[in-house]
Length: 234
Ligand code: UTP
Image (cartoon, rainbow, N blue to C red):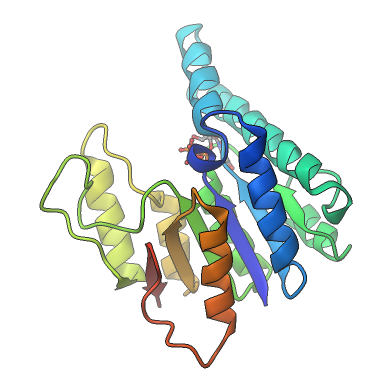
């Protein structure tokens, strides 16, 4: 299988610790023995801090996005370091270069590409562009909820949902100030438009990601329920 894995900055690099990068590197090495893998890393706290300072000093939103992209690429470089020669040596700067890099047979790790989106959208677009079999969004929450569970105790978690439901849920969550959904609206729209098989899951422990991919690749297993996650179907 060709797998696109989006690793949220909030789980990989909220605190910059070598263990987080080593943990993912070791799981990716295992996965790459059986699958082709392309990883998109998020920005995390550093991206937010840099963007906040840039905004305060007068940068416009597109300039802030470029700074965010640089941080996502720095996180990609840290993961590449942890993977050593198992990884393609540079984060590709666009989707076409990512496709070329994949033909090296190495694990490809990249960050953001253009302003106006987040790395979830990069991962969704890559999945469609490369005709990947599966998109896994590893994030800080254990799936998609009907509302932000930190703000609404009545929020319920979806075990499975359609892409259309995902779009509606994400839009409703995003409308409330300060709320943050595990999938950004553009990514949700792309997942819907392209019928992308997607799993949104809690990814602070990379071995959970390994287990989910293993289960997905074993066609005989009952794949309906994703441990600590939500399955999005077309
Ligand atoms: P992230 O995708 O990491 O966004 O990119 P995030 O909301 O901080 O998500 P977490 O924390 O990883 O879960 C960081 C910032 O980089 C810019 C955006 O400003 C984004 O908020 N960015 C990223 C882009 O402009 N384009 C991209 O393709 C990717």
